[in-house]
Image 1 (cartoon, one colour):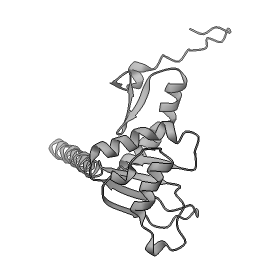
Image 2 (cartoon, rainbow, N blue to C red):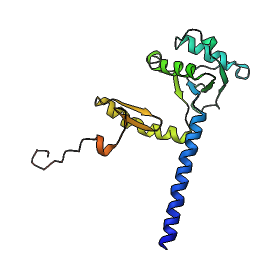
Image 3 (tube, rainbow, N blue to C red):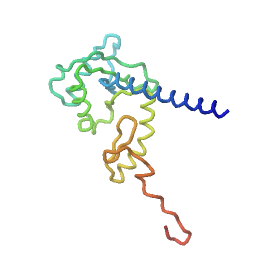
Image 4 (cartoon, rainbow, N blue to C red):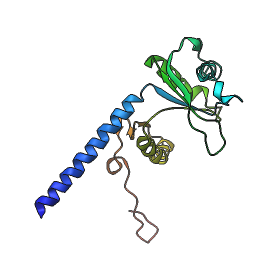
Length: 180
């Protein structure tokens, strides 16, 4: 019986490893992609030149000169949204330097423009993991910790976040108004 349990456990471990490898491959294939949100749609969606729309956004809103020189492999809008907001646009950059130049300009240029967003594309599972980490990341940053979100992990001072190592112990109330 124990042999079967060990075998089943080994299969689960292998399955999880394969899933993580697959997610890494998916993420790598999305490395050149950015998702642009909040950009108004034209009335005639069927004939919208989304590449021109993105280049205009990059030049006007992100204030990056010569946006016309940026080359894309593919630019298109995603499916309709249920909330009535403009459909997001996925842009796959040809040159990773252009991708990074655009991505790195976002925090400074869009800080006062909350109607717009520009984010790296990740597989759905990784996006969900990242969303779940945001509250903890913000809490750490509020405390003055130098924390950032890299892929699907919080980094604190350049090291992976480990709650048991990085969190101060919770004070225990002894019932007499004192904490120990």
